[in-house]
Amino acid sequence: MSLFSTSVPRRRLLQGLLAAGAVAPASALLAAEATKPALRGSFSVDDIHVGLHTSGVEKPVKLLMLADTHLSRDDERGAPYREFSARMAKAYNHTKHFRSKETTDPEQCFEQTLQAAQNSKVELLVLAGDIFSFPSEAAIEWVLSRLEKSGIPWLYTAGNHDWHYEGQPGTSTDLRRIWCKKRLSPLYQGGDPMMSAKQVGGVNVVLIDNSTYEIQPEQLAFFRQQAASGVPLVLFVHIPLYVPGRPVGFGCGHPQWGAAQDKNHLIERRPQWRAEGHSQVTLDFHREVFAASNLLGVFAGHTHQQTLDVWQGVPQMVVGANATGAHAVIEVLPPSAV
Image 1 (cartoon, rainbow, N blue to C red):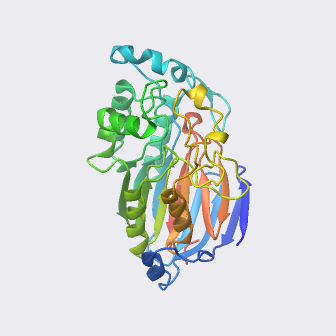
Image 2: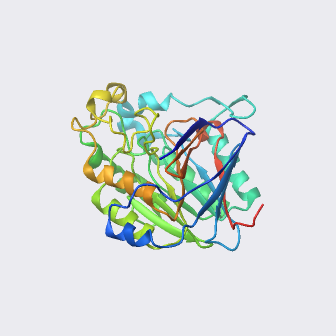
């Protein structure tokens, strides 16, 4: 097994010919899938532009992904929750643009990113979590109005801040369920908040909510179905998947994830991570993702830093924070495309 890890500098071209996953599939579904022709070809990264080549498409498919906008617009409806939103409401009011380094703000960056998506004529917009610093009605309504005005189809999965009012009692699983239903539900457009998939031009775009760092059994079953389809697949999550050499912040599937490594639960006023570490389901999910031969790549946010890793032939790109204007334009290309 090989590993390539790097931070991705601007304007640096990274290319690699990717092999099929090196770990034997753990399930019968993946065992059957492994007999199919590999769909994963070469990939390239040039600044925020990603090219994924596959024999599974005849025409280019263009996506735009953003994460970590951290919008904190609020109004009088948020007054009862101010004790829970106060810290994050101050966190990202002013930022520095990832290109110009000039002072900007998350709302301006979000609108500029939507304009970039329109200019690039993307076929799908993927919002991969922490669009909000807390589940403010005003911020959610503002985003919905901008998305609808853009006319671009979108998919959304939550990040760990989207549903989190800091200090509210309850488990992370319960609080996620409550606020996804109470506030975030319009962003799912009638879909399942925990998992979704949409085929665009022959590419299966799959979103899994791992915003608690853990994977639920129904999410693993859903991923197995998508992997077994044999369609080229691109996976989006909020929290990056573990790759060797990365810290616990790359925590979904990290072998050291757990209470002993949780340094931020007091600051974020949330339940501490599980003392016993990851569930077996989460570990199985991690293993099966990197064993899926039709998986072209994994895209995540959460760390706010653009990075690239390749693990068992699968590239994983973490996209910079959209609070600074960062995003990724992802093109799935036929093998002959330049």
